[in-house]
Figure 1 (cartoon, rainbow, N blue to C red):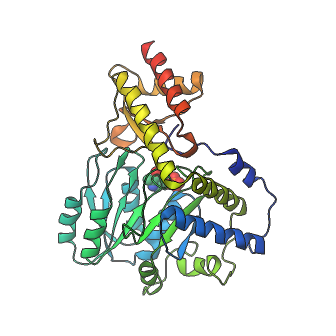
Figure 2 (figure 1 turned 30 degrees about the horizontal axis):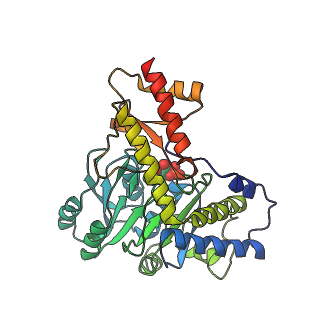
Figure 3 (figure 1 turned 120 degrees about the vertical axis):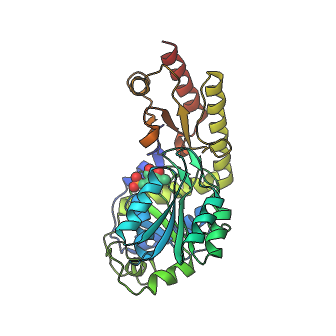
Length: 358
Ligand SMILES: Cc1ncc(COP(=O)(O)O)c(C=O)c1O
């Protein structure tokens, strides 16, 4: 019940133990096509360039940034937690001039802040934000920021590592140009792949750039020859991870996206109500709290680390600690994918009740 990886269904683990085939085997090629089609359904997009990058969520982040940024480009990035900071670091390594739009940790990035920043940037290449900040439990609304980015002639890039599969993510409806995610959060698959999607317009920007993409491994121009129709060897696909993702996506779609979102919502409220009955609360910005990652304020007098240790040692429940300015002040309780279950909510509440009373 930490900030990911989440629990994984037995059938996903079984899929990983299936015999290997070659990464150009017709059976595998068929599976790749099914993974791409299911990812489009989960991202709610028609984008042809939708596939899983080999690597964890951070590889998805780097994929988007290295393909879009050329040295000297101006970009605007929302920073309200660890992952906005990581985006800035990656963008600077690509040679971008970064304008940071900062909000206190636990708060969302306001569209008005992005509008103000865009007035000061002459030619923004893109605006990037983290949809669900796993380090703080805040969910930033996307649509108005997307509109402002486009109005300024910029692309709009979204991190959905923690949101995808756990709450609404509507790539085409929100006009998101580039998006990445991870497998180990609300998709409930082990860590190791990073689903990404680029709109046709974004792909054109990436393919018409003047300088070579500085990463060979993540260059979409090369990767598209393997994930597209040509099937040219680029790198050896992580075959077993793709088996796992195929099964995890099948389970997501069998449950239904709306049902899955509702399940995450219901379990969040069950946790929140239980915490409130114990005089505890979720501390991220009211009205914008994530369903899948709950930032719980540590009550006065409680030893943050000792409680977490006892939860693990005596109750076999793992939760996360706060990071950065929230270190020592919050616990992060994940209710992601398979982990988002009423029994888990009841178990963590009962354990906290016992530990804190003692
Ligand atoms: C919002 C967000 N973005 C990016 C990442 C990086 O993903 P990974 O740790 O899989 O590389 C994470 C990981 O927790 C995340 O929560």
